[in-house]
Each structure stands twice: as structure tokens, then as C-alpha cells.
Amino acid sequence: MPVEHRSHTRTDLPEVVEALASWEAGAGYAGDCLHAGDLGWYLRHPDEHVDGTVHSWWEAGRMVAVSIVEGQVARPRVAPDRLDDDGVASVVADDVSRLLPEHAWTDAQEATAHRRVLLGRGWRPDEAWVVFHLDLDGTPLPATTGVGPTGDAVDERVALQRSGFERSTFTAEGWHRMAAAPGFRPELDLVARDADGTAVAAATAWSAGPGRCGLLEPVATHADHRGAGHGRRVVQAAVQALAASGAAAVRVATRQSNTSGVRLYESAGIPPVEVITTLTRGGA
Image 1 (spheres, one colour):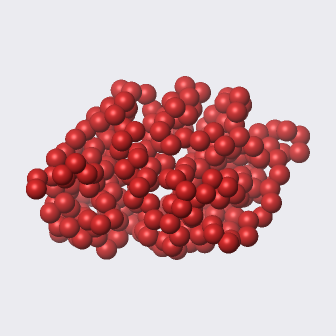
Image 2 (cartoon, helix red, strand yellow):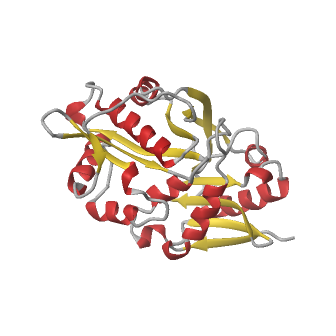
């Protein structure tokens, strides 16, 4: 049966997010790949940025692959039961390659047909990322204080993101678009404060539903308040909130070169489980 390629606007993404969330396993690390929460975070962008950049592939009325294709970067994911399907991998690789410019980067889950197809077409390993994963069932979680939902403190939440990431373009309007995205839960969008009540760190967690793996995306500590444990505190609070929501596990990834991020997740009690590499084509 032929595989149908679709591109999406914001208004028809809830079906895609729901299908993507259903692919998340429960306890036990199943590999790092695009999460429903990645789409939720992506929807902070305005319509003119989002529309036409989310793509999916369907067979017999069922989604078998999905990808964000944004500028020079693609983030594809193939359904768990089709990871070894060379036919689906080739169709996705064809379409994503066509959508990307000559010099581009892409995720490609390790030990899958999609990665094998891309490597066979001349794509090559590029940047290393560390993946962290923690099963939540029965895992003792440390108590945290001074952390709560963003609520009405949107401007403070935005300021934390912009201070934590030098090139961030996050805005209050972007937060409201994110908060309207399918899968957003206000109790999983958190701000940490110090003893004086100053907002010092933030984290947004995303649930894929009870019994499935959740995601941290993003986590930020204000540049003026680093090194005091605030990032660790907000991460631990986000993990607790995911556990309370019924999530079976949590994962997060950061560049291996981001040594402070690697230390943060390790200190928060989320162990590293894999180092993966993105793929690139073109360029030097």
C-alpha cells in the first residue's frame, strides 16, 4: 500500500501529536527520538513559521512517520513497529532530503532503517548528543521547595528562557502559543524562585500520557543565578510533576559539548544512557 505524505498547519496538528504520543514506551529506555513535547515546544512559533514545516506519512489511515523540517534541520521519527522497514525509511528519506537545502542536519534514530538509508546516501555523523533517561515507577524523588507553575508570571518565565539561552527569541506571545498547543499542561511548566522570591530557573515538562515516557524541553537557569543549584531544583520538580501525572519515565537530551547541561541532569539524578550523533550532508 502506498505511503502518503502530508504537510500540516497548526490547526490540524492535534491528530499528529496524539499519534506521536502513542508511540512512547513506558518504563525502559527505547531510544531518543522526536517526542510529542518537541512538537508542543515547537508550536511557540507563529503560524507563518509553523505552517508547512511539520510533515507526516500515512499508510492505510495510520501515521507511520513524522518530521519537523525547519530551515536546515529535520527531526524525523518512524513508528516503533516500522523502524526496520526499508520502504518507509526510503520514502521518508526521499521527502525529507527534497525539503532540506543542500547543507543540512537531521536526527536519525540509531540502528534503524532510516539511519542506514541516510548513511548509504552519503550523510555522515556530525554532532554528539547525550541522552538521559529515568524510570519513575518506584524511583525515590527528592523533595523540592520554591518551585511552582508559571501561572500569571509569564513575563518572568520568558525572561528566564531568554537569559538561559543567548540566542533565544522566546516571547510572551510565544509562551501563550505554546500554552495553547496540544499536550501542554500548566502544572508541568515550572518556575523556581530563590529565598527572596526572585525567579531563577524554569523548566517545561511534557507528558505523552499515563504509563508513557515524558520529556523535559526546555530547561533554563538565569545567567545571574547559575551555580547555586537552582537548575537542579527545577529539574527535580519537573520530574516530580511528571511522576504525579502518571508518566512512567522521563528523558532529556543535550549536546555533549554542553558540559554544564550534562552535569545538571546527572546532578538531578537522571542518568545518561546513550550518546547519539546527528547526521549532516553538504558543507566541509
